[in-house]
Length: 117
Length: 115
Image (cartoon, rainbow over all chains, first blue to last red; front, side, top):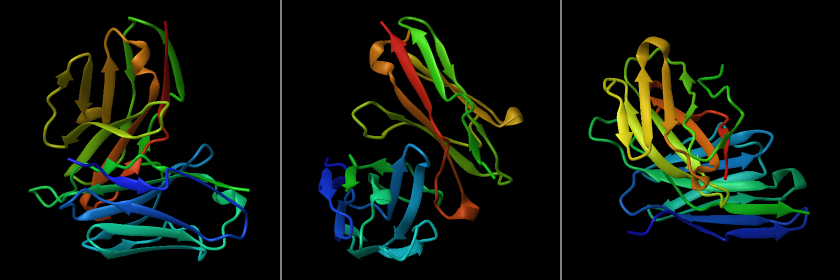
C-alpha cells in the first residue's frame, strides 16, 4: 500500500516567491496534518483537516501561510510570499479515527525540504 | 505547558549496550494515547508503537521494549543490544480527546550508537 506522498521532496526558492507543497494522504484516512520541523522549534503542528474540513489552524504562523484540502486525496500548503525563515522540512501526515473514536496512528510522508534564499 | 517531556537531548552508547529513552507526559484526561516515532538520518518519521492509557502492559518487539507507568506518567523506550542502525532521533507523542486528534510531540532524543 502506498504511504503518504509529498511533493516536491526538495524546493529551493528565492525570497518573495510563492511556494506550494503537495500531499496525498493514505487512501481512506479521515485526518490530514501539516507539520513544520526546524532545529530551533522542533516539530510544530500547522493545521489539520478532518474529512477535508480544516479543524484547527492555530499553528499557522501568519497570513502568508494557507492550506487547502479540496478532496479526500489531496492537500496543499502554500506560502506566499516566502521568506528565509520559512526554511524547514514540512511534513504531511494522515490518520484514521480509531474504533473507539479516538485518533489512530499518524503516518508521515517523507517531507519536503524547503530552502528560501 | 509542556505536555511531553524528553529530558535527554542527546545520548551516545557503544554498540551492543542497552539504552533507555525517557518520556514523561502530562494530561488530566483518563483516556489518552502515547506514541513513539523514529527519525533516522534520512529524515522520515517512522511509527514504532501506539499505546492507550488503559493498557499498562509492557510491550516487547524484538530488541525494542516499552515500559508504560501511569503512576509516574512515563512511557520509556528501551533498546537492547543497540546497533548502529538504531542511531536516530526518537520522538514521544501524546494525544487525548479534549484536543481533538492533535498529537503533542516531545522535543526528541538524539541517539548515536558508536560502532
